[in-house]
Picture 1 (cartoon, helix red, strand yellow):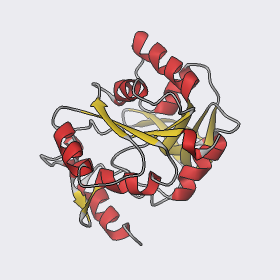
Picture 2 (spheres, rainbow, N blue to C red):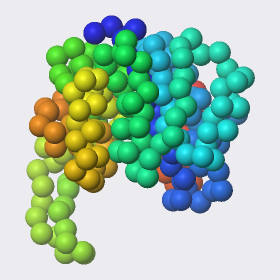
Picture 3 (cartoon, helix red, strand yellow):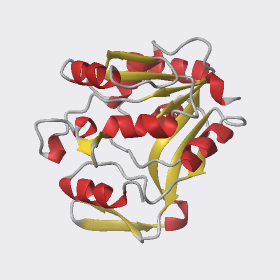
Picture 4 (cartoon, one colour):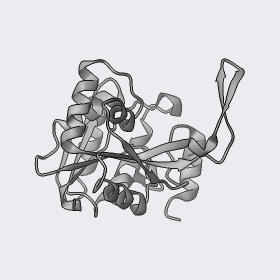
Length: 226
C-alpha cells in the first residue's frame, strides 16, 4: 500500500452537546484555525482524497472554510448519519475507487501526529484493520453501578484513539453488514471486530486527545503547535 491509494474519512456530524457550545467544537477556531482544518493539515501529505460526512448545519460551514483553502487532494462533503457508524458508512459510499485503504479520524482530534498516521498506514500493509491506541497505566475496575465486580488486568487494556484504518473492500462490506443488522458500535474498529476481522493495535500519542469538554479545549490550546 502507498499513500496515494489512501482516503481519509473525517466524520463531522456531531453536535457537540457535551461541549456546551451552540457551534460544534470541530467548527470552532483553535488558536485561530478551525479544528477540522487542523486535522486536514496533518493528513494532507499522507492521503490522496478526503470524505467529510456532516449534517445540514455543518455542510455550509465546511464548504465556506474549504473555499478559502487549497488542499492537494479532492474533498467530498456528504450527508452523515444518526450515529458515527452511520456517518462512516455514508462516507464509504463516496470514497474514490482508486483508494484501497481508508483512515477514519475524529474531526475533533486536531493534535494527531504524522507518526500515528504513518504507523496506521504501515499496519494496513499486513492487516485488514487497525486502531491507534494507548496502553492503560491505571488499574481498571469493572463495576455495576457503583459496585466493583472485578479488577481487569491492565496489561490487556488500551484506550482507543483515531485514526482507525481499514482495507476498503472489507471495510465497506463490514459497515454494510453493521447497518443491515442494526449493530451499535462506538468506533470503527468494533465494526471490523464484529465482522470477524483481526484489528491490530498501533501506538498512539498522549497529545492526540479528542476535544469533548471545555477542559479538553483548554488542554488543546496549551498543546497546539508545541
